[in-house]
Image: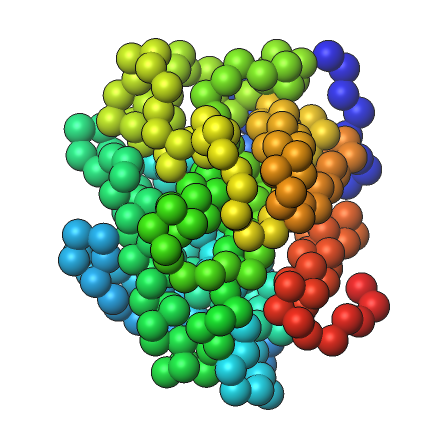
Length: 316
């Protein structure tokens, strides 16, 4: 299908196409562009960024990165951030710019989680999810020690991080975990379905691998065609009742678009407050581009966080 990019997102929209089909030089340039998109940020002078270590899901050392804006009152709300990377890549550094934006714009304390990445024959589901749940419990228990409010905790995750956030919300609901104020799913992958958007925008596919060789299969520890746990891929959960409010962002040209659209519709049908934003003429992970549309999306996130945290409602 022909797709006309939102002005300013032309190169980003075609990155995956270039990486999959371009020449060696084109692929190298596209990979460098991706790194540039995700590494550029400016830390406000009055913001503190501190890395700490806590025991992870299997008691292994796990890093949390805490972003604290200046002049933040005591008992500030908290946003736990789960980075993307297709379950097998990514790190805390790729979301520095987003964590700073959310921390300053809400304002709130943001805590990034350096969960374990999946590896063929090694780390697999549920280990990354349990790292995130361990982090959530630690944040809830120790919130007051770093100036946070344990009763005002939200989640934000992009792509695979969105999947982990959605799975974490379900796991916390089912296991009497910490109460969540809001769950933000940004361009999430939520199923293994061959959705219409995957066929419609196949030229922008995130991967050309078959399912049994995919990053999703590595995350699951193998794929045999059976339905996975809904904690791994939340779209397979039949009962979405009693979940916290959600905010779902999808890109019009993202192959994962329909995962987000369908999940949002099901949440609303289940009586769960859910905002849905379809960003026009952009692809997967578009929020890495420094652009007025990206700024508008981030401001909308912060406005929704303020609402669910019972803060003052301001212009955005």
